[in-house]
Length: 179
Image 1 (cartoon, rainbow, N blue to C red):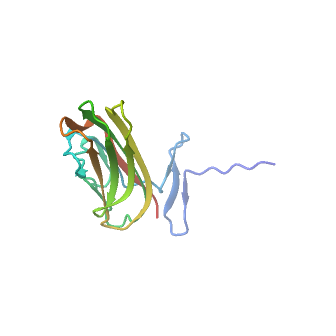
Image 2 (cartoon, rainbow, N blue to C red):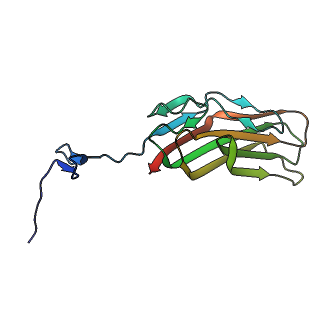
Image 3 (cartoon, rainbow, N blue to C red):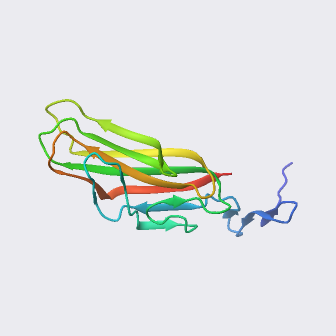
């Protein structure tokens, strides 16, 4: 024999709502992945050859649920310490030719130090890297006031040409996944 329980709200012993229903089958839970943020690079950024450079500002199509992302860095807000998932992608462009020994890398920084790196180094001859798209994904414990940033680095054996990160394809985003 089957039983049916009908309710529009499930509460804990303290009277706090855990799950609610709107009567049409749509549930709302009190567990959310907030804070959450997203920003795409506002414009292409030229990088100095051989220098770690903070990539900024990530202000196009910005989402910022807790006012914790200023387009440059995400800072864990008060009461929101926990486990976080961050992801970033950068699209690098070498506007030079005839060079070998290209290096590109991207880093996620936590409190001013690199904690995750993705790097590509081309040391062959006869083929040049013109474009490189890199992505980083990271789950990390974060305390209140910890801050996270994205850095890029480009170098080549040529002393000429422009090194840049393209805006339409470069982004930084993250969200809290738990306590």
